[in-house]
Length: 232
Image (cartoon, rainbow, N blue to C red):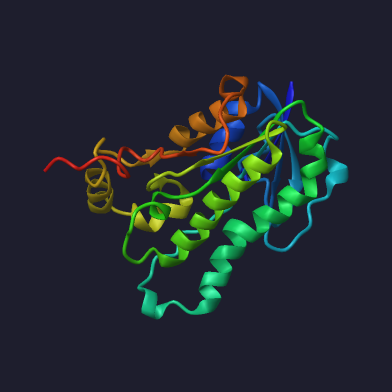
């Protein structure tokens, strides 16, 4: 079985990925807490992506797949965002993932062909008000992923999933009432917001041999928002 490392996995999309993969791969989860993980067939490594250096001695020498889950949704008018907020979003979304990849690069290269899956946002490709900070951080991920995919092909595949609003703890404040949930659903051509399982299914595909001829791509798993007009 393959060795898959998830950075983050206690909640939301990461947890859904862990549940989907636990019986198909050796799953290692590096996260701050093991909440929601104790009943899963995984190996947990305590790790804070923004502060810690990943302990590679707790990982196998070969890593076949990496998924970096930590992120942020920081929506504010641009005039009210301090530079420190941009730095914080860039750190959790981008700088920390760069550090992780550099740390485990020998393990990824040791695989016959490893797969890295990263997460962007529909906001990186669409001009959306109040999204300047998160769009900047996620845009960095998209450019980085394409360059990394080119540099390490064919040894490492790198792909990005760019969701729209997804029902996870990170998005709780945007889906906290029935009215908010209804409005959010109606903004999407497919008339619903995303679920953790929607994104987990695509992630598992990109980690698998079924996607072995796919690299350097941005997949918009977003209910049609980025490409389709909403019917009114």
